[in-house]
Structures are given as C-alpha cells and as structure tokens.
Image 1 (cartoon, rainbow, N blue to C red):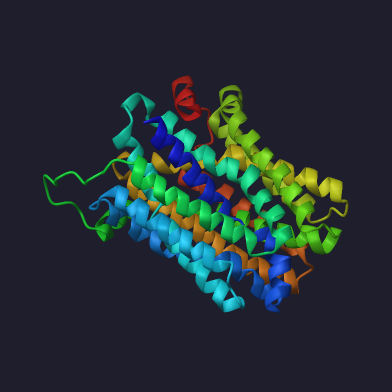
Image 2 (image 1 turned 90 degrees about the vertical axis):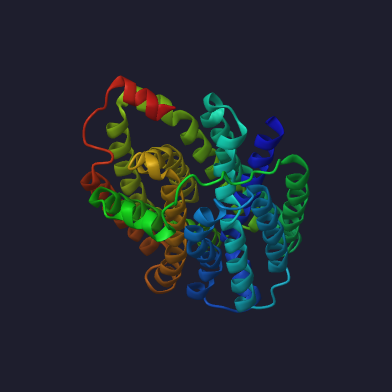
Length: 396
C-alpha cells in the first residue's frame, strides 16, 4: 500500500509540475516563436483546454475499465506528448503538443483519486488522498522553479526531463500497481449525461460551480502572466523567476498546512469570506505596486490565501451531493482547467492592450469579488458559524 501511495504522490508531482511549467517560460517562448504577448498566453491555455474538454469524459468512462491500464497508458501518452513539446518548432506545434498533453493528463489524475479507496482501508482513505494531494503542493514549491532552472540550459530541457520522469513512472505503474478491475454491475447505471443532468438541475450546484469557475478564472488570469510581469517589469532572469515561484509555492504549502488551524479558531464561514475578501484587496493593491520586494510579498500572501481557500471550496463542492462525488470531481477539474484556458487568453489580451499587469490584476480582483457573492448565494458556505463537529469535519 505504501508503494502505491508513494507512486501517486510522484505522479501528481510530475503532473502538477508540467501543468504550470510554461508560465515562467512564456517570455522565452514568445521570442523563440515570434508571437505577440496576447497570443503567447494560449501556450498555457492549450494544456488546460485539452484537460477541460476530456476530463468530463475520462473520469466516468474509466469506471468500466481496468484502472491500472488506464493509468499506465495515460501516463505513457503524457510522457510522449510532453517530450514532444521540447521539439516544438513554432507556436502551433507547441499548442498541439500541449493540448495532447492535457488530454493525456485527464486520463491519469482521476485514476489516482478513484484507486485510493480500492487500495487502502476505510480509515486511511482521507490521509492517503492528502498525501497524493501534497504532490501538487510540492510541485508548486519545487517542481515549477526546478523547471525554470532547467530552462537555463535551453527552453526544451524541462519538457525532456518531465517526459523522461513520466516514462519512468509508467514502468513503475506496471510493476507496483495491482489490476483494478471494475466491479460487476448489479443494476443498470445512469449514463454520463444523466449524472451531470441530475447534479446541475440543483440551483445550489449551478451557483456553486459558477462561483468556482469565477475563482479559477481570476486565479489563472493572474498566474499565467506572473513570469512575464516579473521579467518585463523588473528584469528578472529565468532563474530569478524560478526563485520567486519557489517562494510563492512555499506560501501555498504554508496556507494548506495552517488552514485547518485557522478554521478551528475562527470558524469555517468566517475564515472563507474574510480570506477571500483579503484576496480581492491584495489584487487591487498589486495593481498599484512598483517595488519588486512589495510585489513578491503581495504574491506570497496571494498564494498563502490560495492554500487556505482551495480545500474549503473543494470540500463544499463535494458535499453538494455525497452520492455524486465522482461526477463532482470530474466537473470541478474541468471547470478549473476551463478557467485556466480562458484566463490565459484573457490575460494575454489585457496585458497586451490595457496597461500590462495592472489590468490583469484588477480583472482577477473582479473575478474573486464575483466568486465571493456567488458562493454566498449558493449557500454551500453560509454566512454563519458552523458547529464544532462540522468545523472538525471540514478541518480534516
């Protein structure tokens, strides 16, 4: 069991590293492929677009297949398409390879969450999922900066390294993972469309998912051009951007670790709405800052807040319908990457045409404001303190 959970940790680390890899590389790739700042954002969005379009199908479809084989073939495809990014010769070839890498990832990540309950005892499921999730946080802390440092030896180097690591993980999947065959159906299961229809007929669910999309739209609009902002405005090198991203990743990990303690002290609703309000104010402040030190501090706070908010939002969405957790997970992933695809495109347009990062920052602040009001309207996180029992449940 420990081998499988360790494997899941490294799978999520590699996928998390690849997901955000291009952001600090955008200034270099923009010059390499001779494209405008506005168009360059689509090199981030292509991966997210591929994931978003296929996540809705990959999760439910794989329920009827051997999860080990789905995981292995998905990771092999991920290794190949990521390595191909290192051979991209123009914008459209990079767009195509990133799009295919996103599709491949959509067939890997859902298998991690679906396999854990089949491999570990009931009392260890939450802890095991937490360890797998930690791979994503560590990717932001170490993986993305590592990619920036590797790019010093050539922009294609990170893609080759991640592709090679993914190929190694494919071999481990075949040797470490047992076969995870689907259970024989005892009754006719609802179709994919029926599952989504039943979920989205609930007004609460529609409003909550709209709130989540608004949050991710604001999040990825700003994240896509952090590297470009730090490079063009403050003259940071790739290594300098990598160091800054490492600092921000540490903030995200710190937020994830201290979020449960804050919830116990202040209550879940108060924590959520206070911290989300602070995020809005921080982005408004970012639009006015001209000092690199203060910009770094402000982004550090942004990532701390993100580490606190993300588990709260995911828990709230999962609790909308306990009988549809898999469907909710697929839809949440699709919405997140949809927000990344749209956000990167919006960021490119705003950055190129409307006062650089100032317009990006203010747009993100507007998205977070909309998310706050939509979450309040959905009532999945009400404006009141919950009981101590509920607080303990959320904090776990």
